[in-house]
Every structure is written in structure tokens, then in C-alpha cells.
Image (cartoon, rainbow, N blue to C red; front, side, top):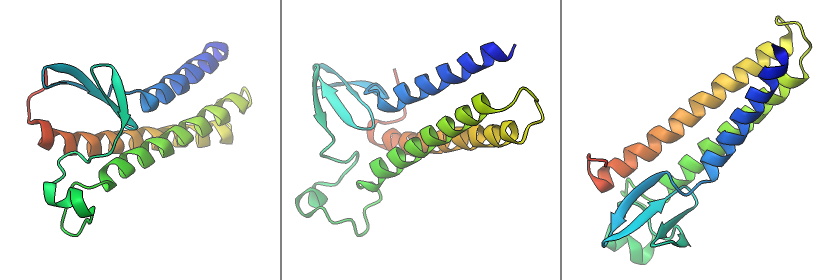
Length: 144
């Protein structure tokens, strides 16, 4: 039973890292071409570029890049990336503590690993909430 849990934990960590690194957080059409974006870059018609513009950025803020009263500036990307990276680190710590724990289910390492995994899940949900909260205003409330 414990043998399979180790593989489940490792598979969860690998999938979590892949989901953070992928460019397919959102797919849409841009000028008739298929487009997708992730945390690190966006792709239009299979040509990928780093994020240079901010979602919902006003034209007057593009020239001087000042964020005085602008709600949607680069902090949106930075916050989502930071929470996802902290979440991956928490997941890694939880998996590592769970794997190195003794066979006793009431071990202190198992409990600490469980807390790290719960914190990791909370940080991931927080990152997804920030991302969705900003992109829903840019693309409208319909997803297809």
C-alpha cells in the first residue's frame, strides 16, 4: 500500500510542475489564428513570445510603464507566478517528507508533509483565482 503512495506523490509533483510550466493555461482565437498563453509566454499561430504586454493594460500605461492607479499591471503576472512557484516548492517538500517518513502513519514527518501539501494546494488555488480574476475581465465572461 505504501509502495503505491510514493508513486502517486511523485506523479502529482511531476504533473504540478508541468501545469506550472505549460503555455496552455488559456486557449483563444486572436485575429482568426489559434492562440494560447501560460504564465511565462504566449503563442499565436505556433509562434511563442515572452509576455511583454499586460492583460488589460491601458494604452497610456504602455508608453511609460508606470503603475499608479492601474489595477492590472505586471504585478498580476508576478503574483500568479510567485504563488505557483511557492506551491510547487510546498508540494516538493510535502512529497519529500512523505517519502522519507517512516512506515508509521502517525509520524511527525507525515503530518508535516500533509500540512505542506495542503498549503501547496491553497497557494495553487490562490494563484488560479488571481489569474482567472484578471483574465475574465479581459476576455469577457464566456469561455468556449
